Image (cartoon, rainbow, N blue to C red; front, side, top):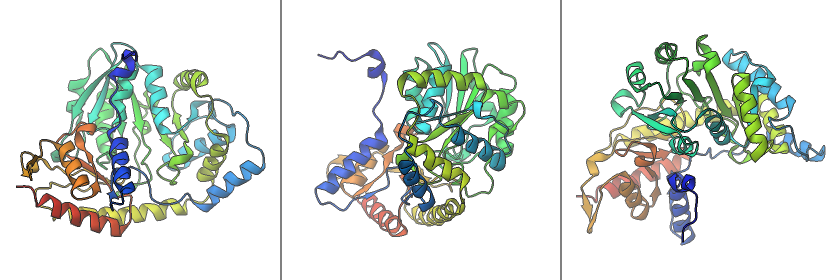
Length: 397
């Protein structure tokens, strides 16, 4: 008997976590699997941040914090937004939560209701449409293929907006593609949105610092967009702090207050010790961030070069994040030992079970003709995994 709520039955399980679990199961059987499925830096949290956390424990930061986070952390975020992004916010316009994932969900739950439409450019991060469904909204998928570098155009955005449109979710640098919107491209989208003031932008900028084209550009920089944009960011990717679970939003105070009200009822403030660590991340030296960025850029160059040597892969050059999203539909319909590849999920499972490399099928990201690989791993793993993928795909006839 299934007594689960309709809400839960509408949700799809996370395919990225499922592939990671499957690869861990094979590893537990003693199989040498290279895991390219998880979007997580392979670096350790910088020492000065860990020291701040230890100090916080010693100083007894062990009690409930204010729901939106400690004032010291929110002020550090205000300074970061001013210094790095030239954006003016107050501490009252910042709310911290248990990771940027919760921050995105908070905003969607606060803004979106039954019948509201949310524009989600595809390829998208797996959780965006699911969060919209959780809020009883309708995800409106706008597809951008590899030929347009996986970025939607102002014309596509204009065509997708209806009187029911409540929000646009914009992720730059992008998971899963690594595409980055330039200032000019964002200006084009902003010009469309300025004509539709009922539409809010949820700007997911969690990969801001993993950027290979220079300065990060935020859509919030345009005066006509500031009051309609909610920035989402956090410490997970830039500072290698995925497990610390600190994200934040910056936006109009009325939205921030609404998210605080929501968060106050279902999680309260985020981890006290993690907040002190995040404060140190924002106020301390930024040298480790640049060191990690340079390592990711080197790996990006390596994986692109090797992936381009794989027959049947169509590869673009990601400008940020740490993902490659090759188009691989030339293999659909091919077989090996009675096993036929129908789609990207089949291809990902074939690469895992036969080639012992874990990737994620693009269907989960709204692009069923692609697969996602994370190159947040060592150069040696990248070289070996690309060799395995090339040899395994050669088996398909």
